[in-house]
Amino acid sequence: MGKGQYLIMQFLLFFLIGLSVFIAFSNLFKLRADSLGGDITNSTRKLINSYISSLIINSFDTCKGCDFVSVSVEIENRTGGYFHELYLNSSGLNVVSQPGGKNYLSSVHNLNSTLNFSGNSSSAKTIILIKNKNKVEAS
Image 1 (cartoon, rainbow, N blue to C red):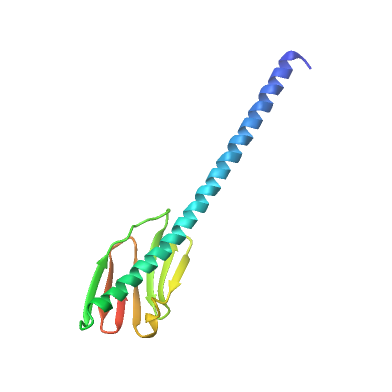
Image 2: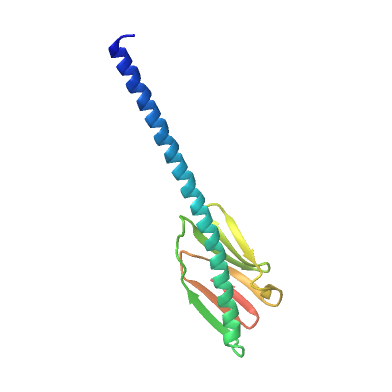
């Protein structure tokens, strides 16, 4: 093999090694970023659920004689690239992250056995919780 061919082979070999190292590190960082995004979104679902639960409990605790209480709240529209949907039903409070559809369901500290829950809302708009006697509605 001549000197010119040896230099070309050396250049190609170093180029391929450098390219493969670059691709390996790029994939490593992308996988780590995706993993962190999923962890952040999971924690956010739990935090939103806890926050809305505390608002429901607070609306009952602060005004025991009131028949009607309305609470308006805004939450962060997108966290970790996901937006969140809230569903109130007989099972309790369900927070669903979109896209992907992963959810977190809670019984709102077992209030779902004594109250009627209904409605849904999204983090893209202001969430309005309405307490009317023993009914809680989200819109």
